[in-house]
Structures are given as structure tokens and as C-alpha cells.
Image 1 (cartoon, rainbow, N blue to C red):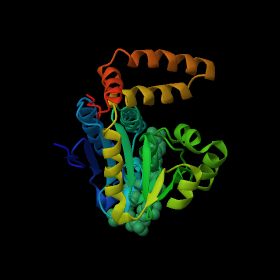
Image 2 (cartoon, rainbow, N blue to C red):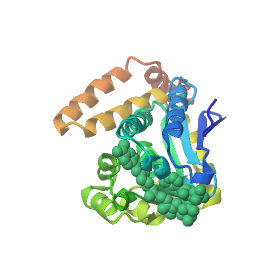
Image 3 (cartoon, rainbow, N blue to C red):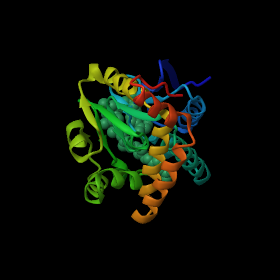
Image 4 (cartoon, rainbow, N blue to C red):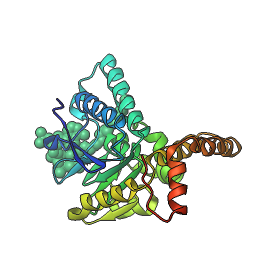
Length: 257
Ligand code: DAK
């Protein structure tokens, strides 16, 4: 039973909440391990089509890696922390369901990296995001140096890294770090509406499409286009391709698996 992670389900969406509000949901080894287990469990359940990740309390999504515990780490413990963090971020970044970070407050350092590991980020007007690691004499260690430039471009990413300052939600939207900004009281509802719209479509096709996009970004264009052709052909081995096209021709809603 997880101490720091709560999971509730609403239809095809699971809402996963980091539950450590007194420390602004800071990420220690236990939080990261529990998050891995919960996400891994959701990934293996086909009926879960969207996972919404958020933080408990009104102040924070996650204010970063736990500085108090990091400050005491031996090199061995730091290595384990790093492994656990990367394993969790990689688990989230390769989920079959679509993942939405509902950024309800501070998402700093490791918290920002966690939001970036999700597919989509919806922020409340209260959100502040940034990577302040250089103010502590370190660099982002959970994939931030790689995911941030892929999301916002190298120039903006270096600005965030070098200033270490928190950016307001609207600035994050302008630079492409978040998809939408909404009022705090509407945040969860808007994420659930998005989840509902997503869950009407073929989860299998979305998953294939996500794989094409993320793998394609690591390849040169010619190889990426070749990869897309192969994956496109693969969708024709699936029930959802036959069902989606038959449903269109029969003028009825599709019933996807
Ligand atoms: N870690 C631990 N505790 C934290 C925390 C954090 N990141 N952020 C906040 N807290 C705790 C505070 O210590 C305080 O605890 P008490 O004093 O009440 O016991 C409580 O949460 C409330 O925080 P504040 O009193 O500070 O609240 P304020 O509203 O005044 O300020 C704040 C909110 C978010 C501006 C402030 O708390 C803040 O600046 N927090 C730190 C933000 C930060 O620097 N985050 C980045 C952390 S570094 C790596 C892997 C990962 C990383 C690096 C390397 N490797 C594997 C190599 C990642 C690093 C980071 O994420």
C-alpha cells in the first residue's frame, strides 16, 4: 500500500496524486518508487486509457527532488536515487495510456522533470515551473536537460537552466512547456474532459502514434518516416483499424477495444 501516492479512477481515467503536501510533494526515493509501482500497474490495465498526474494541496505539483534527503546522501545512495528517478521517469514517458500532468502549483526541478515526462501538461494559473538546480550547484538529474530542449528549443531551455527562475504559467504556455492554462478550480475538470475526449478514440492507435512520435524524434527524418510506414502497416493487424473503418462506412460510432 503506497504511503505517498493516491490513485482514484473515473471512467477510463486514473487520477494519480502525489501525497506529500507538507514537503510540497518533494520527490524522495520512496515517493519515486511508489510512483513507479502505481504507474506500472496502470500501464498493464487496458481499460485505463488516460492517467492524470497531480500534486496534493494547493501549492505544489512537486517542488523538486527532496533537498533534505539529497543533502545527506552518500555517493552510493545518490546513485540509487538517480536510478530510481530515471526508472520512474522512463516508466511514465513510455506509458501506453496518454499521461496528462495537471500542474496545480510549483513544478520545480525534479517536479518540472516529472511534468515533462508526461505527454501533455495542463497548468493552473497558480503554476510556476522551472529548473532551479544550478542554484544548488547541480544540474537537472531526471532527464530535464534532454526533455526541456526537445519541448521548448535549446535557447529557451538554456535560459531556464541558467537563470534557475520559476516561470509563470502563461510564460510556460508561450514557450510550449504547457499546452493550456486554466483557472485553478477548473484544472481537474478540464483534464477529465480531455481524458474523456481521448478515451473515445482507439487507445491502440494512440499508443502506436505516440511511439512513432517519440522514437521518430531520436532518428533522422528518413529513418523516422520509414518507421512510421512500418507502424502504419502494423495498425492493419488490429481490431481497431477494421472496426474504425467499418463504423465510418456504416455511419455508426466505433466500438474500440
Ligand atoms: N525538498 C525538500 N523539501 C522541500 C522542497 C524540496 N525540493 N521544497 C519545499 N520543501 C519543504 C520546505 O523545506 C518546507 O518544509 P518545512 O520547513 O515546513 O518543514 C515546506 O516544504 C514548505 O516549503 P516553504 O516553506 O519553502 O514554502 P514557500 O511557499 O515559502 O516556498 C518554494 C515554496 C517552492 C518556492 C520553496 O519551497 C522552494 O524554493 N523549494 C525548493 C525548490 C527547488 O529548488 N527545487 C529543485 C530541487 S533540486 C539528480 C536528480 C535530480 C535532481 C538533481 C540531480 N541526480 C540523479 C544526479 C533534481 C534536483 C532538484 O529537483
